[in-house]
Image 1 (tube, rainbow, N blue to C red):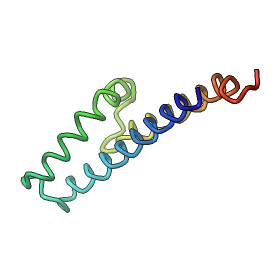
Image 2 (image 1 turned 60 degrees about the vertical axis):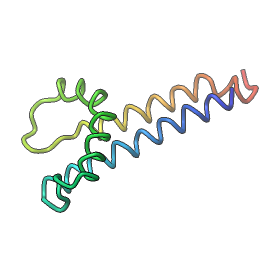
Image 3 (image 1 turned 90 degrees about the vertical axis):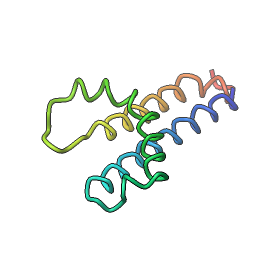
Image 4 (image 1 turned 90 degrees about the horizontal axis):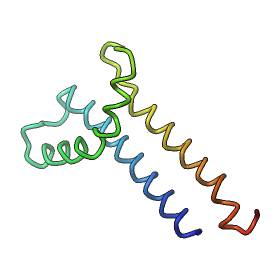
Length: 99
């Protein structure tokens, strides 16, 4: 059970880092710091978009229009950490022998 909890924690942590990387890259592209025509940058942007957009799209549909500010990654990160903590509270007692 500890291995499963470790795996869940690792996957959530990696996904949070991918969300942060996607947000930072979108800012860099918006301010023309990186060139989107560069094939490597384009591939990285496409990968991050394909990984993060399916989870962000439902949140963006619910949120009101805040102009140019997109807080959906922040909300998703908070939800992921909340989910991780709930999973650890429910299943952590089984993994460590405290029932």
